[in-house]
Amino acid sequence: MTHLISTEPATGAELWSGDVGDAATEVAAAREAFPSWAAQSVTFRAETLRRFANEVRAEEGRFADLIARETGKPLWEAKTEVAAVINKVDISISAYLERTPQRKLEAALGQKIAVRHKPHGVLAVLGPYNFPAHLPNGHIVPALLAGNTVVFKPSEKTPATGAMLVALMHRAGVPVGAVRLLIGGPDEGRALAGEPDIDGLLFTGSARAGQALHRQFADMPHKILALELGGNNPLVVWDVKDVESAATIAVQSAFLSAGQRCTAARRLIVREGAEGDRLVAAILKVMNRIIVDEPHANPQPFMGPVIDLAAADHLQTQFLDLMMKGARVIRRLDRPSETRPFLTPGLIDVTEVDDRPDEELFGPVLQLIRVPDFEAAIREANNTRFGLAASLVGGAPQLYDRFWSEVRAGVINWNKPTNGAPSTAPFGGVGLSGNHRPSAFYAADYCAYPVTSSEAELARASIGEGLRDPNMLED
Image 1: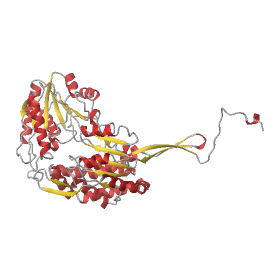
Image 2: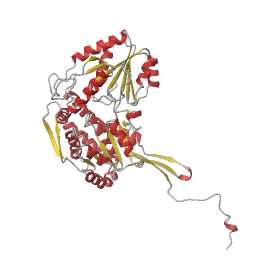
Image 3: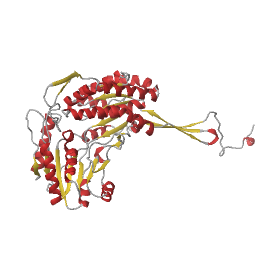
Image 4: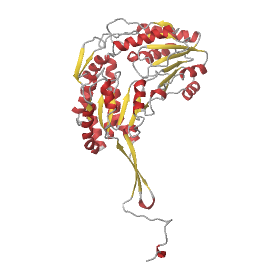
């Protein structure tokens, strides 16, 4: 492949095209730029990135329009992504100062102990298609701020957004060599990950790709690897007083971004009997009102299409597989158009399915599981190899305390959706959801390494034990 074309999911129209790049060339350019960028002060790098935020702000409308067209997400949602790109700069500066501060400690005889941080060097960033600006930006900005240079390969499904992100950085004064754009598909991604001259890789994507990268980096402990992967996230609804609000939270958790969020609720766990029935009825009422349409439609849709036809086909196959295993369809995952990847949200009861696949259904599918008691709800919530997000809706504070204590996840919410984690806090999961390198506010931790120094203005040394008395030595 020598040329890459990006099309709009909602219409199929060609949006952007560009030449496929070469990983080795881009890494070499970033390596050459590293010494001068790392030599700049943190204040200089921070001010440069603040100018980048201003450039994004100036292009807010055009950037949001591009994201909406390239991903298919509603325009209102694309605008929130651009706002997150802008906000990430000041948040990252605060995080860097808090997470990687310089410290000087007094020691004996006028010595000092200093703790400072150094950048790794050249970091590769592989971005996803669901948040093609915000999520890679969440790696790139902290990496640049720490003094690294970056080679960024956007998803082959959203290269136009990646190209605009990098162009705005260059326009703001980030040196052309300090952030490089690599256009390409999976082959270019593998080539970048395998480049011997990168010092680390920051990845957001599927668990399967993350596992492959983890194996690839297994014999390279000198290279930093930060993995942000997916989730098979549970939403437990228990003892709710406001059923309509609980239903709204369930719909937001499962179907926002057409379910294409790593934190989306995949499994809805409820008490069997009348309580669960009331909740399902309320959820169906909200689902009936969901508008599925193209990004710029009026009125604005809640959901756009999924990213492409292959993704829609795969989701329908997964839904059919659940049916074949004995699941009961409550609301079908319909395909309004065979030629475009629009899907209506689906709800399916998998309580009686013994061999439920523990995988991330990356789209608008919510699986219902009915359990007899809260102990079983906890057990079911933890019945996954993933551990990204979990949420409890309802219950008293004591119930939430138990939920927080016993559920395995990196994001645990109460009376809030599973998705929409704040950038002012760490973001990451356990199990197959990551490799203990949380991003967002904690991204600074994997973008620089600490250096401890013992320092004295004069060289003074003595050895108190183990030497012969100098007066006893022969001439």
